[in-house]
Image (tube, rainbow, N blue to C red):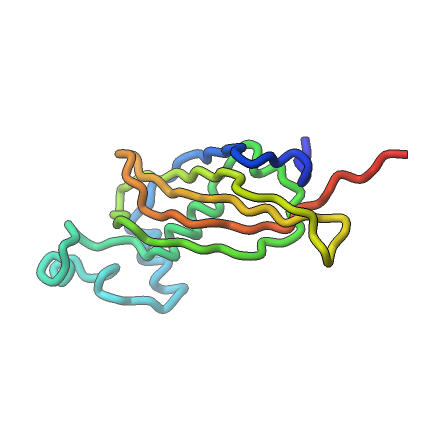
Length: 150
């Protein structure tokens, strides 16, 4: 069942399935992004130079994984465009951590430039299996409005 702008009341929440971030994910993301910072690639360096327990996943990797997680309800949105993503990286994600995301509709409005669509802002938190919030921010989508039936 498709969801449209009119179905998205402020306060409506969507929770994703979980996914474990692996060492292979981190290595692959470093290769794709070119980000070989020792925070992500050098276990001894991290332990010696940072307060972290070991190598950490790239913040943008965690954002990407969370964005792709299967999310009942959210997956049915009639999304026309993904307009914006903002995140604060508030805690580390380590290889082996399982994460899930929680989106809450914080605002919706009709689009001035696209009369058949609206702009929806969702607050998002990415949470580890132990309840630690690792990222928080917002996503903004352009979502189709329901067509008027004759």
